[in-house]
Image (cartoon, rainbow, N blue to C red; front, side, top):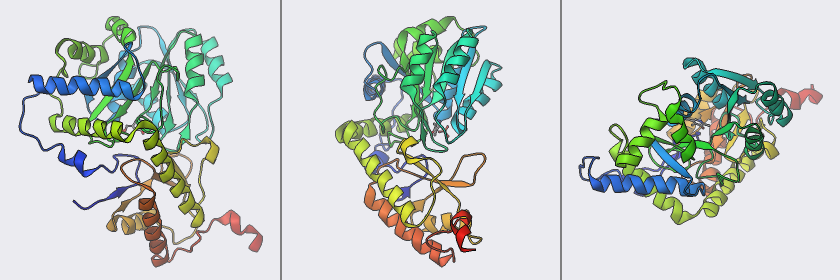
Length: 379
Ligand SMILES: *Cc1c(COP(=O)(O)O)cnc(C)c1O
């Protein structure tokens, strides 16, 4: 199969062995063989974040947003409030979910290029004793900023709140220790860090808190965490039909994850990200987020001011040559993103920048790329 390099923030480039793992004999997912497969996957998912027997994982058939939806709608007791620490597009999505379910929430906003202030978070917790969930995003995939989850989680627990973190764009890439990082619930989908197929997402969290949530208002039928958990515990299966072939690919991806190793894999993503930074700098592009604030997986880049710059034309040039780049997700700024996810390594990135450079030249865009403020002195 022709190899494509995806530099978008997921789905990620996969190995051929993961792709072909989907081709299996037809099987009814209620068979023991499939139940055993699911059990193994559930254990593997907890192992990746070093959770002990107090943690479990619950799988859903859906993209990553489904896990956000599940956590938010299932874990809030009646008459309590969710505090969303919001410095980007994915936490803003969590706020939208709260709105759709008519949940009580506080949208604690911070600028997209800054780390949230712990003082302001603590102030919010002090003045709103009805907060029972603190929610944030680990790596804001829209900008690539890394939020200080351990510190936020410590604050959440100081005020007896449950701490939920969207780790969709760090899980199985940047090492996470669920207990040390103060996480009660985190989540991801199979097509990002795991480098598996689209269609499965999962929540990892504290068993006792899931069991407690049995008494909470049921706000969704298909997306209720306790209901799905209970079914898994009783029967070892999803309540409704799972994405069978996607699950086989996921098992293969998990095997490959453990084969590569947590640290080795993270080193590789860091190598890829370093190659992205080098290429960006060589062509004169400007990054949006200060290097020291980045999670090391997503690089957000400002559009140059060159009148010939046209993102879609650049995108199409690269796409035709096997490389996919992606628009940004920062409200106030025109950006695009290059990401270090997937089964790729630094030489793929070097090849990409060669293609990008050729593309810029063919499209008549000056290299190094041009920004207004850099040329002020000359005019
Ligand atoms: C990708 C992503 C999601 C989920 O997006 P889907 O399109 O539903 O897969 C959620 N949160 C973060 C931080 C993400 O990066």
